[in-house]
Length: 61
Image 1 (cartoon, rainbow, N blue to C red):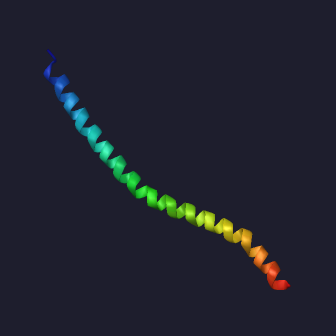
Image 2: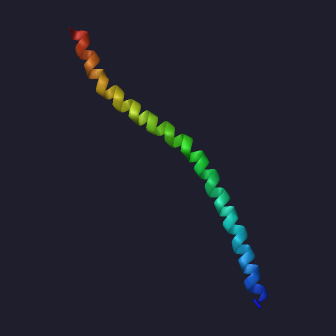
Image 3: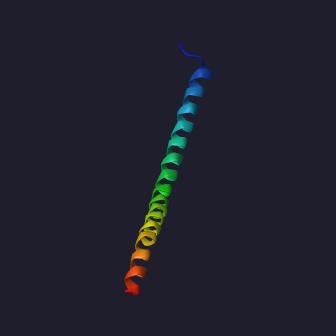
């Protein structure tokens, strides 16, 4: 039979494991949209940087 401290420590570990899992899930759900916006801005900047010289050349002629 298991001793009482071992059982109590197992229950405490299970509780805190669930708390950490919930915190990680909440944090990742907050980070995902922010990451999508940041990547969109980076890719948009690259596209503008590539097309801006082409448009400036076209305006000369």
